[in-house]
Image (cartoon, rainbow, N blue to C red; front, side, top):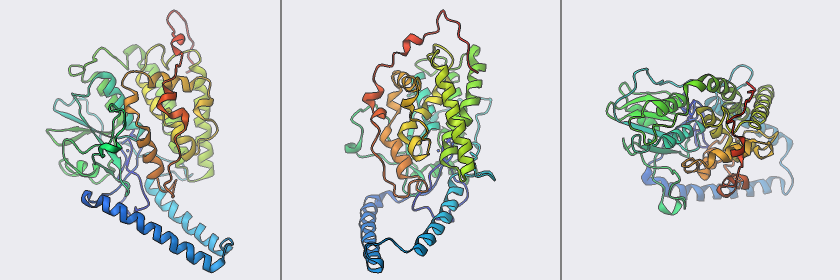
Amino acid sequence: MHCISLPSSRLPLHSPPQTSFKLTCHVSPRMSLNDNNNSSSSSSSGSSGSSKGFNLINNISKLLWGPGLPPGLLISTVRTGWTSAWQIMMSQLAPSDPSGGYTRPPSKFRLSRQNPTTKLHLYVGLPCPWAHRTLIVRALKGLEEAVPVSVAAPGLDGSWEFNDIPDKDKSRDKDIIVPSRDKVNGCRNLKEVYKLRKGGYDGRATVPVLWDVDKKEVVCNESYDIIEFFNSGLNELARNPGLDLSPVKLKREIEEWNRMIYPNVNNGVYRCGFAKSQEAYDVAVNGLFSTLDRIDDHLGGSRYLCGDGVTLADICLFTTLIRFDLVYNVLFKCMKKKLLEFTNLHGYIRDIYQIPKVSATCNFPAIMDGYYQMLFPLNPGSIRPVMPSVCEHEFLSRPHNRESMSLVGKSVQHVL
């Protein structure tokens, strides 16, 4: 799974086919780059021009029909035009099947059986839940020094681009991961990184990307391959080699959870948000909430999905759930319930959030910016709502009391 770059208000409707998110979150979004030297001046002039344009339109509308509503013909014409433009942009952002259901493009670069032995570098984007998985496993295994990271941010044109953020804009918590420059290749955007590989690349530029520094080659852009590799393939370099997030005795159970969670929850929220028909949305939202209900029931008798210890299945579920009330509930129309309304799910994410190093991977303002301000087809005004109080660090740090769910000495029948 991966994340692509996102279409934006500046994305031309004829933009080239499928450049991506392999956001290669196996989730995919996409696009281009403004010259860094002109970014501040263009931002300022763009804001001024936008304001003048709005005032001009406002004055013309008052002249034409006074304080009343626009005439019906104008409304229907604009509606038809917007719907057509929306369909075109959504076809770039979210490929669909004949029913209008979102179909996620597969990752292009899978990890080979022969593990890379050269110097590695990780590329991520903070909004992307698939890239977030790799940051968490990297942190828990103690691979920060062995696998350095460069953090891209969505640009106004939808591309993943690299820029150090000003000190005044950095989080007060110095441990929180923030956007950065490309620390290994010096590229301006992720598309340039992909093009460095032998033979170039014209496909989707998605995150996460595991990069071979010496060979200048993409090792992998499939998130699950990367977290499995981080868990067991670099123990000689890890500061916490004893941690096993996928024990042999639990592999079958982890795979069963993944088969349920990936299509219905991880990808399910995107199938809701990117649905292009009512039928496709109804199928996706029903599958999402029936699965969340099932997981919630299971967590009433088990601290984590597979018992007393965190596994890769928990990490994959967490990176979607931590974004649920923050983004998916509103922007992706997953509105039947907030996570807080479930009996066990919110305590479960607080439990994982409070594991040392996990909270530092959760940059909530960056996540909100990546969705609300960059997913233009879903939020044309690019207005970012206020952060829900239940998503703030102080609330997520409250006691969860899930230690009492320990299964030691108990016999638990799993719901799978």
